[in-house]
Amino acid sequence: MTRIIAIGEVMAEICRKEDDFSVGFAGDSFNTAVYCRRMLPEKCAISYVTRLGPDPLSEGCIARIEAEGVDAALVSRDATANIGIYSVATDTAGERSFRYWRNQSAARKMFTRPDDTVFEAMAYADVIYFSGITLAVLPPENRRILLDWVKAVRETHGIQLAFDSNYRPALWEDRKTAQDTIASVWSMTDIALPSVDDEMDLFGDADAGSVANRINAAGCTTGALKRGAEGPMPLGAHPCADQRFASATKVVDTTAAGDSFNGAYLAALANGKSQYEALKSAHDLACHVIGHQGAIVPPQEVKTS
Image (cartoon, rainbow, N blue to C red; front, side, top):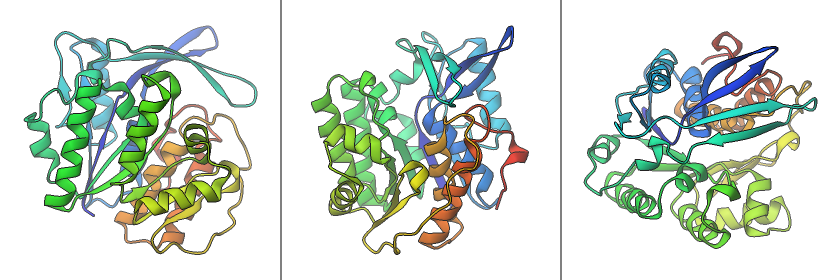
């Protein structure tokens, strides 16, 4: 695995800090790309695919992507739309509440045509990563175009698909559409990275074992079922034995727990690590990240490979 491409929506994040506000950039797939890059060896590359506008916040976002060492060459621009924006507040338990301004986000205009030039560039990837949020923010036709391309390129180029369902009901047209779409994606996923709560909420599974059995039956090669403090459960055709993992010692902000896990897991695979090593590396990073404020912790806080 030498080139990973993550696809999704990155937004401007407005946070209150004492009597002022600060602006950052985050989004589930972008967070994963950043953490993956920080833990990848130099010989491996990660690119980010999104669409931004001509506004100053979009310019700042491009600068942030590049500052993280993530390739921004596949970021397209839209003269008629801007970057999505959200504000965030954190309670005393570390849980966050959000307000969004994303209906006119340029990212919603990705993949409007089957002959979009970005598809040719993405065909050189070893792994394509996206989430249920990536799919939910796209209009139905754009979503279909992306998934048709993924299905074809897995067969013709041997590209692996890594997927996290990351179910957010408010973003989907309806529950049935989300179920049908995500079930179809699981059937062509190689590296499965779901969270147990999302899957149980969407599909009504009784417990983690039921979720794991359903996703394994869909045909994934490897992956992890994220179970929060309980630690990950291995997924795939030949998973390692279920292990115990230490819980986080401090919880400040739960944002990006799953995103950081996904990034570290993909980086571990790129580093040739075993399934257990990948699970431990990913769980350890997620525990570290939730002990800090914000989705993306300072670079010096992450132990790189």
